[in-house]
Each structure stands twice: as structure tokens, then as C-alpha cells.
Image (cartoon, rainbow, N blue to C red):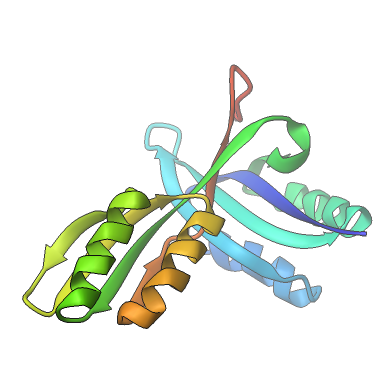
Length: 167
């Protein structure tokens, strides 16, 4: 049975580490559904990579073991298996329209708690954070109203409560 896994990887912030992680996935035919990376500790020179992938339990265990063997990796955590966690995305969504379409786009944006970050007489750019499904639903509703462009960050995730990933 296939499942979705949200894997957090704490790594040394050094050139080429992201390429090595992506190479591990592509070299073995594993799919990356979402990938985010950013520095999280300047003093210790650490970055956090969040990967969302799908596979059987055995495949996901293989992915985690192979990630753990990469030299600059400090810690690998399968947040989807280790307990309660939060997953969020950020999206910028451009909608181009006039008249009733503009009014409806603003009404829906308010209902979805999307923020207007740019506006012209013929377009809006909305900023939205939340679960991927929420962003998908908003974009689906915006299509007939003039959805023109979407830019998404991919998933970022963190454990709830006192559980944490540390080097």
C-alpha cells in the first residue's frame, strides 16, 4: 500500500548537498512531490530540507536509510510517522478579470483568508498559506474567474508539541 511521507532532513549548509539529495531520489526512480530547503541555523551552518514523497512503507524506509547515509546529513525524520505535525504551503495566485469576476474573486479570497498583495484595475495577486488541499481548492474556484498564474513554495513541516529535530 502506498502512502505519502513528509520527511525532514537536517543537513550541513554546504554547496552541492541539495543536488546529492535530489540525485538520490532520481537515481533510484523515487518521485519528489514537494521539496523545500532553507538555512535554519547560521551559527551551526545547518539547513533543513523538507521532502514530500510517496511509496510503500518499504520504499520510504529505504529512502530514509539512504538519506541518513549521506555524509553531510545530521538527522532524518519521517514527520508523517513520528506523531502530530503541521504542514503548510505558501502560494501567490494571480487572477485577471473585470466586473463581477473581480468581486467574486475578492469574496472567495476573503472566505479562504487569502491576502491581496498586489492589485491593478484588471488583476489581483493573492497570498495564501495553508494545507496544500486548501490552496488547490482556492485555485480551482479561481479558474473560471481568470486564474492566470500560480507560484507555490511546496510543503514545509514541523512536529507539534515538544518533539523537535536537532543535530
